[in-house]
Length: 261
Ligand SMILES: [Zn+2]
Image 1 (cartoon, protein in one colour):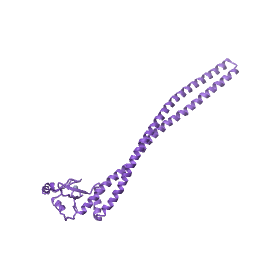
Image 2 (cartoon, protein in one colour):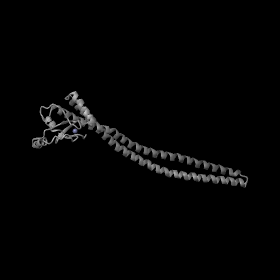
Image 3 (cartoon, helix red, strand yellow):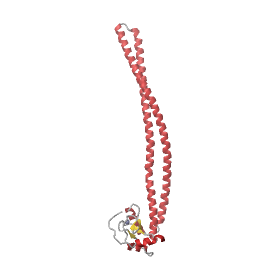
Image 4 (cartoon, helix red, strand yellow):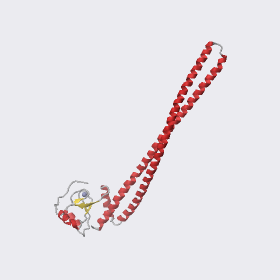
């Protein structure tokens, strides 16, 4: 194979590796964001349990005050009893006392409900705290794995870039521009091997005279697939499979026309 083609192939090998590394690097931010989101969700769950608990504490204080203030009223009514002069006034006062005691009973019922609810929220807070710790533990490991993978990928990227810089010095600028254009058009792969007289990338037939020209040792021309326009190269088969390749090259020169890869 001519030197230029070999250099282009080396460049393609580096480029394919670089594409893979870049694709891996592009996935890391989402992995880290997903990990953060899982921790945030566990935290939000704990916060919600704590907020609910706080609300019951506030309600409880209010009902405790209600109980106290109604009890205070009952005491005042009872103090007034000694000054009562008529039966009617006495009955009215008794009625007030009864109403206040009903209110005390109601407030104490609500207080009890809040205490039961509070125990439930205590349990929820404890469960949320345990869940948060577990999630944080798992995500810490996950995060450090992701960071290690990213550091490795960054290193591979730097190595790949250095290798590419070396590889391109072997290739004339005009040919490099040409290569880059095909790379852009074909998702990173500009070269295709000819196998069984076909373009290894798009599968279309390569004319026998083109293959013959490619096989000439003094050939310096670059050949392209007529269909997908990739630069094509030919690797001489090993001695054992040579007869098969030779007979294959005598097959008809049916020109390919349409299919694009
Ligand atoms: Zn092709």
